[in-house]
Length: 147
Image (tube, rainbow, N blue to C red):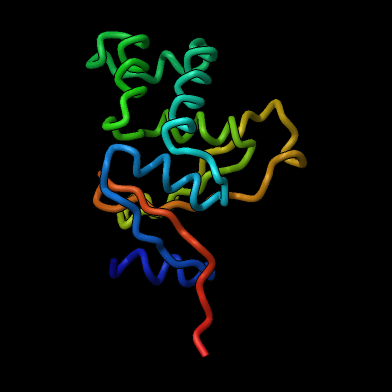
């Protein structure tokens, strides 16, 4: 937390604790984006998008899944943690950049953009989420001013 709190504070944000289950990435994106969508429905939409856009994403899947279809089958389960591919897909679906703030010094921030074929004038505001310890995602919110 010593690294992430000042990074978020400089942006006027704070982290919001998120349950450490397999859906933490999806829930973090939804909360940070202010979207009142069921987390499992959002996951299903992302998997459906990835299924329809196989040619865009298939080459990014490691062979450890045994193939793209097996990856999607795994990702459709509620206990499977999201990864970079699901963040890409979420950015595409929401037409909003997703900025991942990490506690890592190697890559403290990473941005995932919607498809470049869609004018950035049509993109929504960036969604900021937190990635901690290489395994857990948390939401963000505007920092509350204390009086």
